[in-house]
Length: 400
Image (spheres, one colour):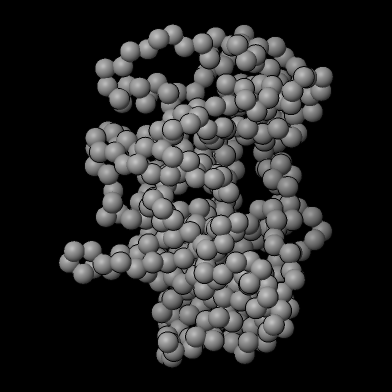
């Protein structure tokens, strides 16, 4: 089906996925415009002498010239700083762990960037994400858009788009969602696109080659504190028989995380700032002499203490239930939104690439519980939980 007269703005990132997305859309007959988003140039936060965005924008330009499509760069660094970077620092200061990739999609690519594209007269925006869009109709014939997992299970990026709305999906295309990564590279190579063999970008989504602690140290100043090791047989994990009158009481009980104090363990080392660490983290503690590796169980940024435990099976890492506050709940399929006291069987994940886990959603006054069939490791405040039925992502929320 030829799509003449339909205009699409493609977010050309300088990578192979968005390059092939632009190629496929042109093949399908769309009028394609390439736009490169420059999201960062804050000299007060120096990361390295490398300048990945410059290299990426040059590659994006070369691809656009090869495809014969118009190309321009848009500077979104002010919006990025306000909506993503400042938010990240604020969250880390509070001892939470934000997900910049999810926020980047919600706030920048499918909001600021989308509005720029529509102002250019575009019918759609397109990206190189590995996910798919479905369209179904409700009882009165209104179109409902579905966010579906990418065909390549190894590259599925639906989780990163878990905060998108119906309005955003209506205007979005995902050209590579039906393909696997090897197929995408093959198409790029066959059509002599300069990005065909380019490695996938690593590090923060907006700066590229940077370690997160290095970035955080630019604004969150080092502050010496102690590392406490909590034993596996701590009083926190010895639960007596509990009787619950209602399911909600049980969920509230299992969603509570332990509140540690210095008396719960022994000091085993020092750190340079509790706000640099996150639940489940293993690297960077620099504490030797333990039988099993130490993992971060919790951080207390007010007292500047890190609580750790030995082994990935430490009971302090494992929890069955989490809670999402009312204001942090988001439904992609808002026609399926749960009312208070309703529940829904789903599959869910609490981080990218985690295999989907069986769970039950329970809607209550003030928010929603996600109750997993099996205990989950390192449920982390500030991260997103996303829930699915089959390969459709229905909604998500920030973990409290």
